[in-house]
Length: 340
Ligand SMILES: Nc1ncnc2c1ncn2[C@@H]1O[C@H](COP(=O)(O)OP(=O)(O)OP(=O)(O)O)[C@@H](O)[C@H]1O
Ligand SMILES: [Mg+2]
Image (cartoon, rainbow, N blue to C red; front, side, top):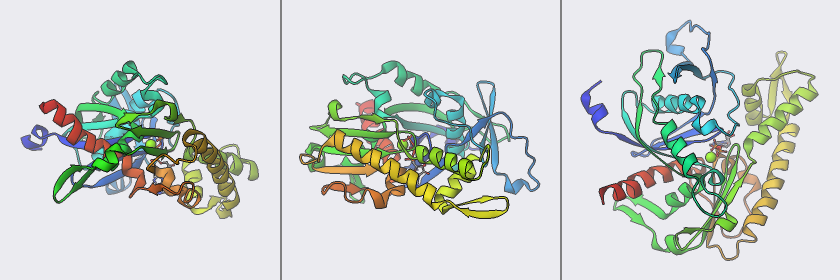
């Protein structure tokens, strides 16, 4: 390691979601790893060390295995402040080539965890999340840790708004004035939560913003239940379920079994719930200039959400919209105010 590595902090947009941890760097590179880890050592020996697919990290005297393992559920309220989260984030930073670097990061919390309904910030929660990711995490295989030296937290869906309003081109960075003034809504369909945020005159409209406890992980749970029921299994691994959602088939007893009907049914249930909730939050969206759909769910459900509103758009690489916005916030909002 050279000294310059730690002297020049690397800015990172870090969307550490319940399902997928997404990372965007200033040169535009994007990384995503499943938010999948478990407490304890992996107890696997790699026959060929170049093939290592499980990585161990230690934080606060606890050891976590990250990578190709049977993941522990992230769907608990304290996940954003947990060692599990820190180990996954450290692994994502390592995957992005940031070994030994000092990192400046902006991450997020669902809008419902960020604000009280009256619009005041949950300062204690924000301080807890800020502090958590600044704690050190040590890779156990001798790699140098990436250390988060500066960390700010913003509401997840609002990050996608920053991404839309601040644009970068060869000519430099620009704030798009007509996007800044126009009333916009962001719908972020994630793993555990779907976030709604409405921004008008540069202010969050709390009455129509909030988090719904509903997302793609519900599809996963439904499909897992369906597979267990249909094939009379006591358990089915989380990774096998994930694969069956992607392919429509589950491999059991050495054979592929078609489960497209289970996947479609679970998907339809989620879409119906999201549709009615989106109508409830945004009405017909007549007075909104644009409705942006972001999050991994906007990719996975693209065919089902195509014509909900005449004024909707699905942004480019929607799964990374929050992470891109977090990076822009770090580089153009935080640093500007720090310099002032
Ligand atoms: N590029 C993609 N193509 C297809 N599906 C995707 C893609 N990216 C993510 N997904 C799926 O979409 C789901 C939601 O992903 P997303 O990254 O938005 O969740 P998250 O941000 O981790 O969740 P939350 O916002 O609730 O914390 C995941 O289950 C993932 O499998
Ligand atoms: Mg998300």
